[in-house]
Length: 429
Ligand SMILES: *Cc1c(COP(=O)(O)O)cnc(C)c1O
Image (cartoon, rainbow, N blue to C red; front, side):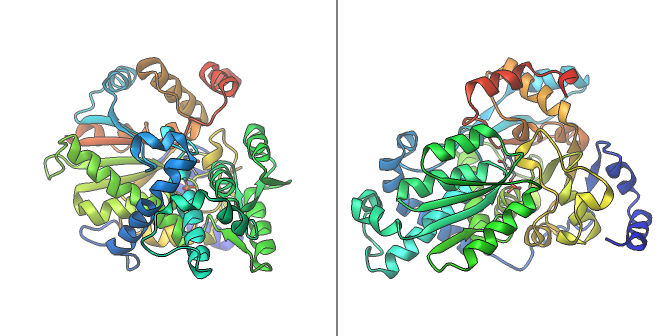
């Protein structure tokens, strides 16, 4: 970005001054308007994704034992966390007026993070399409057949590729291996070693890059476009990923009903979602807005060094601005959120419906992660704890209603890493 343009930007958006200094900020989106939805997808698109996941449930049931208690559906519980609520109130010396819930995507079956929604959906959709085109399945067939050897052989002709900082690669690699696809995960070299090791152990080809995540994605995209037997999962532009994530909103609506949690004008819903490129939180926000309209308020959480969505939506530059442009490093212990440039698609979709964004310093991620473990005995990874400070930074703690912190990952983290996260103190950072 040119110097002149940057100077203008700083004049126009004074908050940039704090953002570029790595200070925690809270940004309210003035373009978020009552009753407005961006022109794009409809509830039918989300339902189409949901029905596809239901069709695949018999396969997932067979292939992944951890989906069996939910009959092959990949879903996580919504649970009250009253002890964490008390601890948060004590640490801030302020009351939280509403109820506090955790959406436990840290416990999602198959790959233990929010990526088990979008990533797995996209690969299943590709598998269905190629199998149908080859005449291997009929629309109302029992999809348990996808476990059969003939499918494994058929899919071994195809390759799934993805560029990823970690969790997306895990979800894509795991589901691809289960279906018999060959798969290739392009990773930046700062991705966690255990994730690379795990992928290699199930036969996934991991390709590492010096340099950043964007480079890794670009390399993956380029290589796969030359190959008709290759499907590239595009973290930044994929509508399949988006719709897979969006089904999470339908599931949440069902869970709220089951728990008799009323959502009305006196009891609005406040949802705090950790954000990387934006697909996961964006899909869920989009679905929730379709379902609840003005009764739901969604906020994205980002690390102070990687507030790409805040930058993109606030300035209206979308993916034409990167955190590097304003001198930030993009480096954070929240590896799922270590993204320098947001998805332009998601920026566009979020502009009229996102209530705001806030940023979090890395040491606070560990404080919340540890507090949650001490109070509720729930382990989540650093990225997944970014939502907690949103309750206070938006002043929503003063309002009645239901607060949902979306815990986006954690169960795949190996025991030794968990221990280290739980012991980590400010001075280690
Ligand atoms: C990927 C990820 C996110 C953010 O999702 P995006 O689609 O990149 O915005 C949040 N938390 C965790 C644990 C993740 O892996």
